[in-house]
Image 1 (cartoon, rainbow, N blue to C red):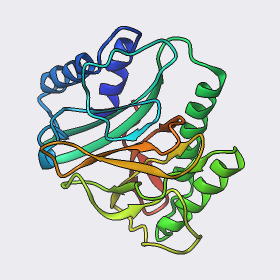
Image 2 (cartoon, rainbow, N blue to C red):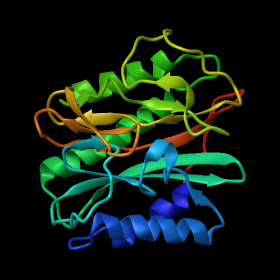
Image 3 (spheres, helix red, strand yellow):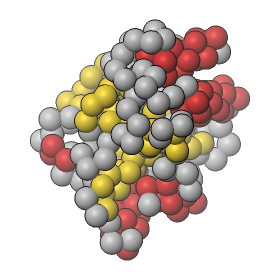
Image 4 (tube, helix red, strand yellow):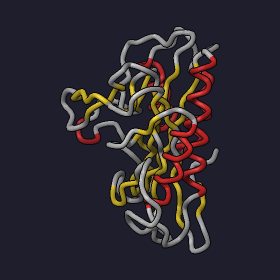
Length: 234
């Protein structure tokens, strides 16, 4: 359902559309599936999705901002259905974007895919982070260290923390039949980020310190006895 929601919303991501409009579209679509947008009201978070534009790293709150030609925007969707959570995000190009903007989008997507491929039963979260960070830094970008993936299932956020950097064999064990998210956030410049409280919520949104671009992709993954299964493929 989360994956289908991102497919559905893509046609609305275009110049002149407000972030609030996209939030309402996701809200209506999710309810039409007899599901619930999990972020709405979660620890006081006020909207149904997170919309992180350009230099916003994550947890951007939808507002009246009108998307412009050349923007990039990450839309993060979490769907709750029958007691379970599915979490996925994608960074979209708004109209025609610069070559550098497209490059960071493509690199973020590949970084997620490389992190997923590093998952092995009884491996570690450090295996995932090591492969992501090696790939991203070789491409000339930096990985956000303070925020990352997480366990998910009957709870929205739970252990383990899944970093986008690390050492092979270090970190928490990857236990078969647990679910987690792999969601590297990569920055065009420094990995330093700034934190801004979200009014009425215990959450914050984050921006790159140098105001350069940031991009992210996310899938929910089931660890199996022989490898993994991506649960948020459309």
